[in-house]
Each structure stands twice: as C-alpha cells, then as structure tokens.
Image 1 (cartoon, helix red, strand yellow):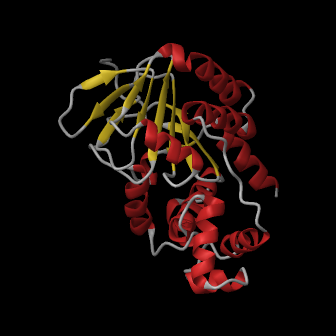
Image 2: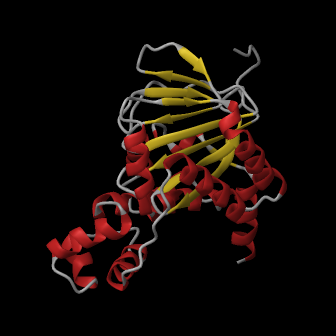
Image 3: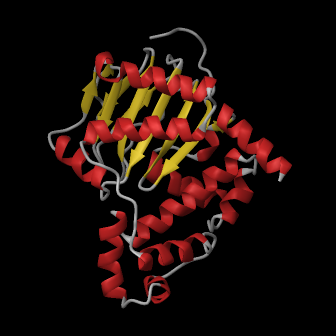
Length: 270
C-alpha cells in the first residue's frame, strides 16, 4: 500500500439506461464497508486497485472487480492513476446476466481481461475528452462481461411515460399518474414498464433524479441547489439516497474532470 498522502477524487459522471458511474483520478481514504442495490463493476488502471469483500475481509489487489447486488464491500482506488466505478441495475438485461454470473459471490478480474479496455478508457477520458467515447467503451465492457446486449425502450407508451417523468424530475410522480400518461391501466403499465426498461417504475424514477443531480453537479451547480432541482428535500436527503445507491455521498466526489469542464463551458455559453 502506498505511503503517499491520499489525493481527493477528481472525475466525471457517466450514465445510460440502467447504468451509471464515475471515471476519475485520486481517491482519498476508503469508505466504510457497505452494500447497495446495484451490481458494481470497478476498474483501476494501470494498477493499484484494492477490494475488501465483507466487513472484515482481507484487502485484495486486482485489476477489476464485479460485486453482486447487496454484497458488503469497499474499494480503495487511491493508488490508481485512473479508476472507473459503474453501477448496474439488477433488473436490466446486463444486470440479470451478471447476477447469474455472480451467484456464487464477487469476482476479481485480472489485468489481461481489462487491459485493452483500460487503455481505451484513458484515451477517451484524458485525450479525446469525450463523454460519448467514454460511454461507448464502458458499454462495451459491460456487454462483454455480461454477455447481454443493452436494451433501449421502444414501445411508444413507455417512451411517453419516460418523457412524462423526465419533465417532472423535481416532482413526486405516482404509478397511476404515469400510467395515465401512457394510456394504460396501472397494472398493465407496471408490467410493460419493467419489460421495456428492465426496472420497476420507482427505481427508474429514483435513477432519473440521481442522474439529474450528477448532471447538474457536472455543470457547476452546488449540492443544495442540485438536490432541490431533482426533487430531494435537501442535500442531507440526497446524501442518504446516494449512500444507499452508491455507498457514498455526492460531497466526497469532485466533478472536476475533463468532461465536467466541457459541461461547464457549454452551460456558461448557453
């Protein structure tokens, strides 16, 4: 383990349907052992990643790790030049495939498995400074590890519901209201929505709200304002929710990576 002082995390947020996460550098002290709803994929490059499985497990060095939903764990990325942490919703096609792969517990991956991806990610993030390029590499990695192709909603009724939710990200939305926007009964809509998105409505709404928070933080909005804009009572409410979903509060992650810088510039120009 390095004896150098911990460096505060500096990075960016990435997301697509059913998956979101962070790419950055630095880390600070490992957070307390925790568990969360999402399946977690973490990669550290070129080396330095350590993973602790269970509350009192031994620290293990690896190139990457897959952690099942609800499994207690923590990670240390302080010695990595770059790290990527992705959270995959268990109900998505990729999540279901990974859950089957991880039915016997977490899996540590070796350098050979992820070396090419790590190089591509570093180039996309540091050199190309492209959100789309980073997302494409992450999507390919998740697809390769899960063996499942991502599925985007296509039913016009579900697309109408998603737009309804997107326009009310700062409000409380109910199943009957969203079902009405889709011209379906609540029960029929409930099943169709899971079939199309891979997530229950409540999980999807929470995911959209957290997605909105991180997007605002990347644009330079302060934590309190971002929390209110996404429908949270206050920053403390947001922090509790983020801890449940990600294992850590937004305050420990500085959105100061190259993608955030571009977002701020575009936001300022607009």
